[in-house]
Image (cartoon, rainbow, N blue to C red; front, side, top):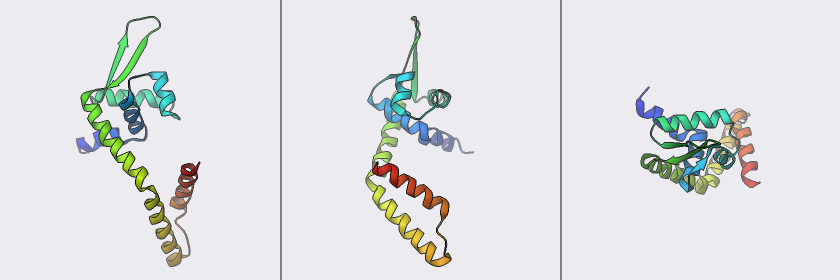
Amino acid sequence: MCPSRLVLEHVTSRWGVLVLASLLERSYRFSELRREVGGVSEKMLAQTLRTLERDGFVHRDAKPVIPPRVDYTLTELGREAAEQVWGLARWTERRLDEVFEARASYDAARLAETGQAPAREAARAGAQGEARTS
């Protein structure tokens, strides 16, 4: 696998995007970040943070106090990556209606051709549409 593809996967993964976007705002402790991101398990968040730290995007600052305190912040490289990813996320939000229209047109054409709607994509689009409107 191309090395840049692996880094891109880390930055654009489901949790990678949300962690980077959250850390753009400020530094977070682990539990705060988990609440901010929402829906991520401890294991997945820890794995995502380790990966982003290894790639040089996140700095882990462990303070020798009792109880232990660990803060996560973006590095300069991480801030640059986070701004790029956040820009793509904002663009996606702005264009979501057009994506839903394109899906509906595709599904209608597919239904006319085959008599069957693409089930998996249609179900996913419906769930996303419901989540978006709630």
